[in-house]
Amino acid sequence: MRLRNIRGSREAIAASGHVIHEEETRAGSWHEIFGNGHPIHVEIGMGKGKFLMELAEKNPQINFVGIEKYSSVLIRALEKMEQEEKPLSNLVFIRMDAENIGKVFAEGEVDRIYLNFSDPWPKDRHAKRRLTSREFLARYGQILAPGGRVEFKTDNRALFDFSVESVKEAGWKLQTVTYDLHGDRELMKGNVMTEYEERFSAMGNPIHKLVACR
Image (cartoon, rainbow, N blue to C red):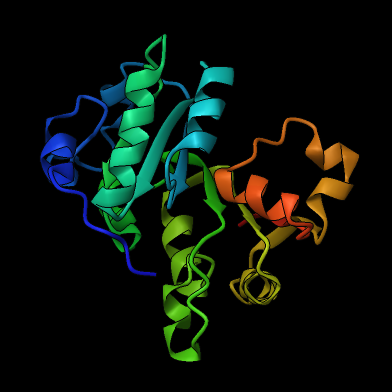
């Protein structure tokens, strides 16, 4: 998918107090950044930020970090943050490639990782780029605290099947696997929907979800 460049987005991101810059961040410093010892939850590929903003508002006792690779997408999340009546002090963004996640988070520093409607990278030669690949699971395993977990949602059945197998091959445990999240009353309790989830479920597409831990 080609993303349209938005003029001034990089400058706005650089000047925003809601953004932590990769080059200024060191692994192990996130509790200092937030000024407390609360658990840290991370969303990789956060898009326009709806999911994390709602979570942050509902869970002030948790610190949230949204990772987004593209400035043209991150700027939309910043615009939403600016519209918030009450600043969300437990949420910050960082623009970076998720491949470098081990450089900005220390071993055991993260309690939960969210992956929502990630790029499927459908060609086999690009499998390592999928955020649920064994390669990425290895990166997550380095930064997750004991008992930490990865939660993944998608409507893409091929990607979901790949992800389930990747978790097994990586030696992780599947705590939850459902091919119809919205049809499960228990799993839907507390479920926060992303923009894509709202759109795809409205079209009748079943939403798949897995929860995995080491």
